[in-house]
Image 1 (tube, rainbow, N blue to C red):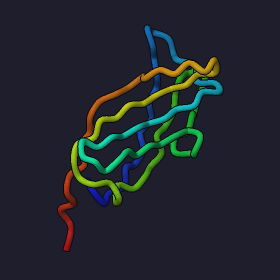
Image 2: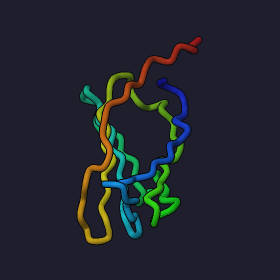
Image 3: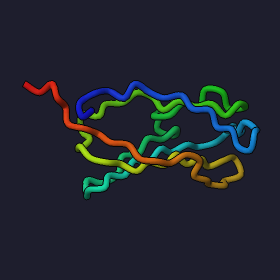
Amino acid sequence: VQGDTFLGLTIQLVINGSNEDLTDAVIVAKFRSNRTDGDFNKTSAAGDITITDAANGIFQINSFSLSTWPTGQYNYAIIVTDSDDITRTRVYGTMTVTDEVNRK
């Protein structure tokens, strides 16, 4: 909901039955609006994403405010660049930011 705080999300990457090693990885979560409002990116390099257990592929998208996000549908992708500098999209989908209903 626009104006709310995204409370964070912990994700474990398991690829073909094995935990993905995130040692020295850089993770980017990209959110792209279906409008012309631009992209919203969260990165491990900027501290928006925390790798909590690299060997077991566990990371957290930290909490952030949705107050500046326009309402609408967003495509998202979570992209991992590993220690060998290989970049792969690991998770993707859509989400919707709806109007705040508590406005006075």
